[in-house]
Image 1: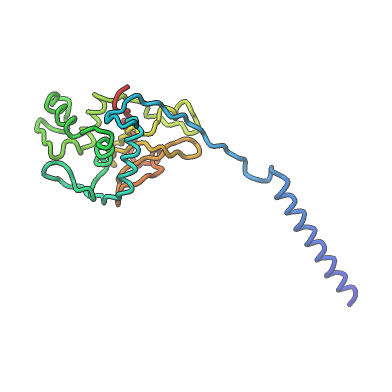
Image 2: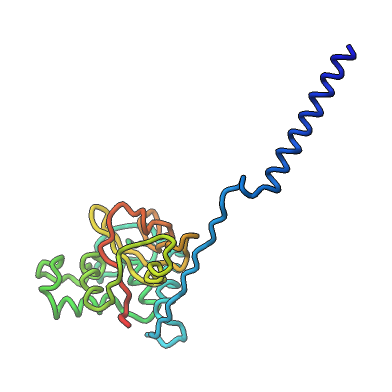
Length: 228
């Protein structure tokens, strides 16, 4: 009986020592933890343009406007509207863009309609039949407009590369190809590796998501508007 008790006590002591040693390794041996990966710090560009002269630059206001759209949570609904503008509670990806620009003092509809009238052959999506009720809400038309009046930037994204990611600034506009044609505004929120989120409406409502690299269609354009 005494022998059995000694064995139990011995095993208990060994278990306690083993647990203590294991805890010591966890607490005092950093090599047993995953390596620390520091966040990538990407400087923000200085935008010299303030269209509505309110003291806030245009790129910043595009982000603020797009985030306001996310907060409003308009439901995704693709439809044709007389006069062009959908109700504030409805929208698609292009509506995030013109509403964000509106908050900065730009009337994107008027700008696109004017450019189409004066340069009709440059807009194949219009097919020689301009329709102000919908033209400014079509991604292919906005791509043509931005190529003509904005700055075209890299479409390459290198996570963790500050030099590359510096070219991806909050307020920039990115477009995606078929089969999931899309347009979004670059957010001021970034992942730890520096890749930015996007502000967009892909349904069911407008949102801010980490889909710049994972959107299921390739990037067709990366623009900065206005050009400076």
